Image 1 (spheres, rainbow, N blue to C red):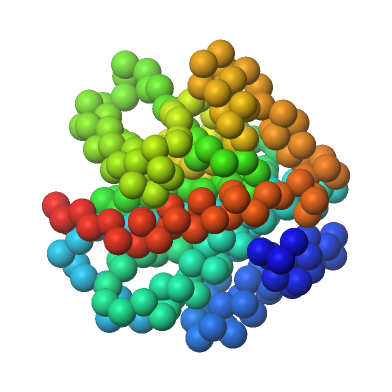
Image 2: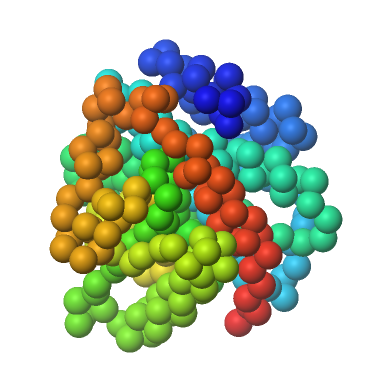
Length: 268
């Protein structure tokens, strides 16, 4: 697949040190990547030059988990998103002016027991709260390597959730919808999806939205009938491999990310 560089295959190999791979890639393009160790998980923070930030506008924290399910190559889940964010970081470094983007590659999303609190993003979100970083716009990208329809994960909250949180979440969700309207040629859906790293942030009272990608027929089935997509059956299996990925998915993801870099929301 010419749209993916050869070294992407190395990232899928069973013995790949994926954290070291990401750090090496970022170092090659002139970016530092300090490790944030929390609760036994090693999150990777992409450090951009300070001149690319303006405190007048909200920080956009963009997240993709780099861990994978044991025994699976993890091509779509979630190497596809990691690859897209790495290429985006390369574009952002060369971009004139500000972007206000904070990229974090998280560890421990595939925690198989212990619920949301066991996932790496939960501890990361707790650290955000302690540092007072509760006003970021948080965007999670997960399984972006198959299909041509971006899916904005639908979230329904119980009545016990504070209205102030609901308002903030709805505002973020509206920004996410507008982002897709501008970047995906109107071809996108909101639909119920499994939680990803957004769950850990939401559980800590920080609004976060999640994007994924599906083929048109699977997206329509999920949107209209809540039908389980075939692409999700590939996840956590050996069939989540290099050959399952589609070029158009990466092109659409790149367009979404570039539009996100242009997003300006005044800080409150």
